[in-house]
Image (cartoon, rainbow, N blue to C red; front, side):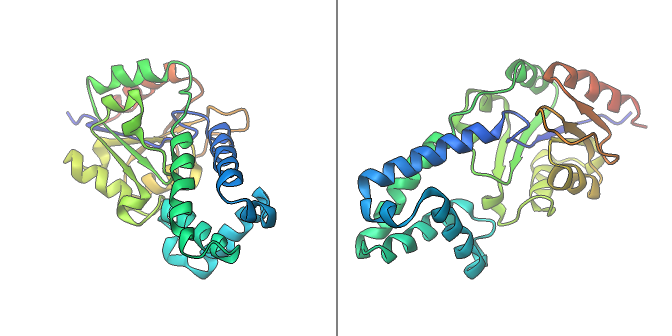
Amino acid sequence: MKKIKLLSFDLDDTLWLSKPVIQRAEQVFYSYLTTIAPALVERFSPESLRAHRLDFLKRHPKFAHQISQWRIASLTEALELCGYKEKSANIAREAFAHFIAARQQVTLFPYCENVIRELSQNYMLISLTNGNADLNQQPVGQYFHANFQAEHVNAAKPEPALFLKALDIAGCKPEEAIHIGDHIVDDISGAKALGFFTIQACLKPDSPEPHALSDEQFNDWRELPSKIEQLEQILP
């Protein structure tokens, strides 16, 4: 009888609610810039700085899957436009350090850590994220065998690279793996295209309806172990 060996997890909006985390990190980021680069904040509001960042990506698409370097490079350019010259790169790196530290200040969904701890006793757990949250900085990270960001493989979900990386590390086939995530395209469609089982996380008030491609879904972390067991029962 086959058995599930690998559980791969998305992070944002699967282990924690992402919106308040990102909002706070952006506030910390801009607040630091007000102290270190007043000429920048005089020219750029938070909204216009974001618009500049998006425009920068259109002009430099090589940063599409390197979101940390994208933020640093676009801010460096904005600082140069504001007259900071050779200081721009250092200021950008310092501001990013404040952003990324705040980015790690997450609050797990209720019961998440207890369930993760339980699941780690029977499965290999690997996190796969398009963002720059670092599970190695979270207490719950101790239960994961490996953690990968799109930046590590220069490709974001739903492209196959992250999923294939997890399969390679786990040494298993797609049909021996379940991917758990909230995003219908990036997580559910991406994993399903490779032959993973999928479980859709529907944990936000505005979560989309369960998608036809998801094998199971859950609204509460306490439901997840039984959902995994149900999928194992249909394995040949």
